[in-house]
Length: 84
Image (cartoon, rainbow, N blue to C red; front, top):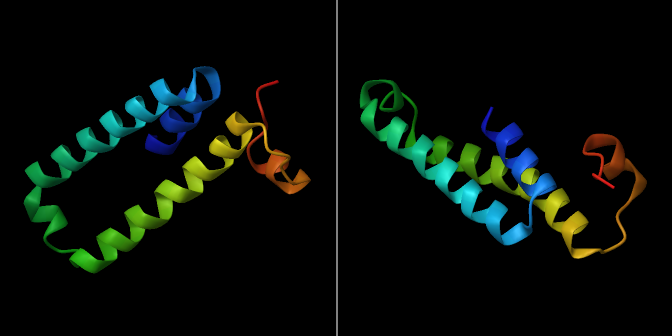
């Protein structure tokens, strides 16, 4: 759900507004995670960092490439199609 929200935001609006929206959604998820400590406490901290560190670049990199106008490889268009 979070990745879909970020993808939609970065695709349909300008990049600066989308990055603010992505930061807000990530902050909300972190707040929810902190408030539910008993679930998060079972998962080691280093694995949580690894998961969040992997999800953010996977989501943001293709959209930054599209918004900057840099030529992108064809396989990237199959994974995340550009808007235009």
